[in-house]
Length: 439
Figure 1 (cartoon, rainbow, N blue to C red):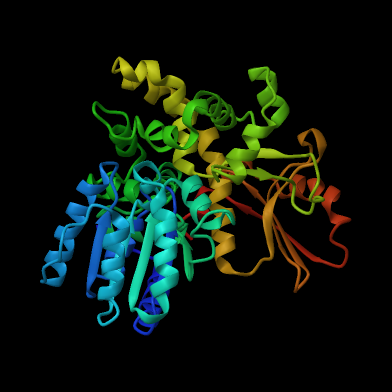
Figure 2 (figure 1 turned 180 degrees about the vertical axis):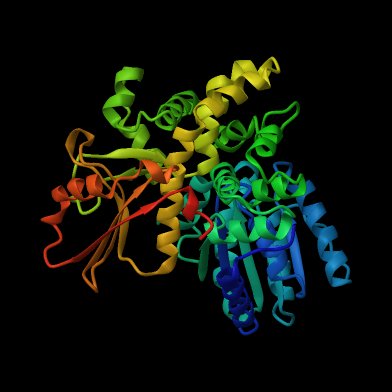
């Protein structure tokens, strides 16, 4: 698959690299696993001198031996002596960059936390000592979000405040996903196919690439790729999150499974688990960035009328259908799980149709607020509300797969509860359905 999107990130990386020709710069790239961080780095510096160090969980001396091989290969010069500590090798490279500009990439940087935690303070001391008289473009990438956040954003950590630029890599937009499918399928693009592609990949580059490489551009083929023997995607949720959550992963998994199954309020979750989950929900949102708390648009910041949603489309699907039916998948009963998915598909995909149009409207740049509205006890629900405070305009929309089930008259009645919060605003009502996905 060719390289897509990331124009803003590429510009930032190139601008930073040029500034590093005068004095060293540090850029940190974070994002969930499979999002495309390494591919972005490779694309950004494909025509530049780059040393690429992939940090794996092994002995520091052995790791340094591998890194030295990379230095020799890319610089065509021998490395003096033997390096058994990363800090000594890092200092050597900083000294090398006093007269020579190059990019050093440290991928999966958070693994030093398991190899030698002293690396962080050692790097800080060396960076402070050398950065103003060297020409190193240092790019640090990491996937375990909580650790990367701690390393660079916790004021008590040695590398706090050392970064010049930070990139949090997000999934591909709905516009990019449409472009990808249009470029790679020979058949006419269908609205339901694009919705399924968005719903199942969530714009995560690795999943997009996997579907493209396998020619999976229909719901049937996408599900067949996920629900098959030796599918990497079946264990994906565990592989992504167990290391993040540690020993308490079972409780976190239970909470996420309930949220994915439409138990979206704290009271609903606690009634099932019979325990206080406030602390878990707070960490899932503010430390792990896996869920989002959603309040009715224009509600007060402290409103207790809160719903929780899994931010990542693929993880939502995984907890809704894979995790809940893991026993069936372990005995190879893929058709059983597929039938469960298909029986719930119209209802489930309808939720992502709403999210699809919220993201699409956000990309227009025409609105200051986009969200949903519901009153207490989930009355007067409005699927999509978009507000332009500058022009004093508000858009209310109902979203359904089938346009025949949309009633603008009922929509206008449901907007009464929010109109008092928008005095003087020009209001319009519209509808979005599956027919509008390709527009």
